[in-house]
Length: 443
Image (cartoon, rainbow, N blue to C red; front, side, top):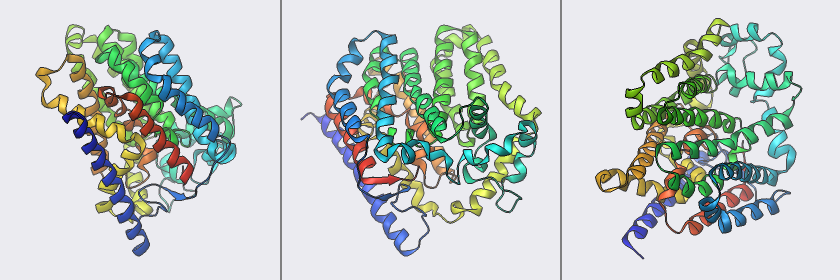
């Protein structure tokens, strides 16, 4: 075993110990103080070994990706690869979700009392609902919004309102939307990596983006949809700054604006966007009009919602108050500030722990590394920074296996630095299958 491989294993061991500590300490805190408000810390879920109709399909997808993923990723034409990544990711997410059955795994997820579909009928007058949105955020306000509606800007809820208006109402359509759209997030990440770093690295990362343990939660929450919108905002910006395309810059800005109105915390994607601009700075200097188009695109969604009467800043401040009115005011920061990172290990897998170690090694000696590897490392580092800022903010105490999905997807390309991909992919698949079969997740 080489020194590099030993260091990879040390990183994996450290990640495993972090998760173990989070489980043991969390169980003690919850048993003695009951302040974590999760049944199986650090995850929101409960112990419940089970199998379901999705089990055979999940095993089949896992074996197929481990056996053939690296070879096909290297040989398929680029567009065919992207299509294969989307299709296989969709199959992986659906099969994991269907381990819990159609109703609990997909159709019922967005219909619970905390979720968006509970308030569809309150948006019969969309401009009126937007203008009055902030009046229902606080717990003591009249007809206060359910937790997830209050906890997000109204574009999140409005998405499902519009699906309902199109005749795609109900939990089945909403869940399918989140799965199918969410599965494109990995495609967007690959597009960005190819544009900013190297096609070879993107191809090496592809199987890891497909077989991510994050798929356990990608099929159970609207955050998969949010992750896709944010990912395509970054991908289009990457294409804009490397291809000098004002149209793509404007489209990227439009999606960045939408991202901020889907989730308050995803404003931190500005850090990843800044990394893209840094990596494409030569083209931006040559065509500064790209920035103008980007900013013009960014302004569209905020302008529309502001004119409709929704004040983003007022809503955010009210949300902070609402957050501390509920479980967020009880959950101990001292535990979650590091236990959230254990959640990140569980959604990105042990392979990503090793990949992040190699990412750090590249950044420590950038002059001795090919440019593509350095660029990929900087992109991943920006995602790590965004995630750490979210962690330190204290506004993400628990439930980060769902909330941090958009950031976690940008850590997975670090696995492109790993050798022996089949062994690492096996570890990723086993973790995802164990999580989904041993726990009944809360989302």
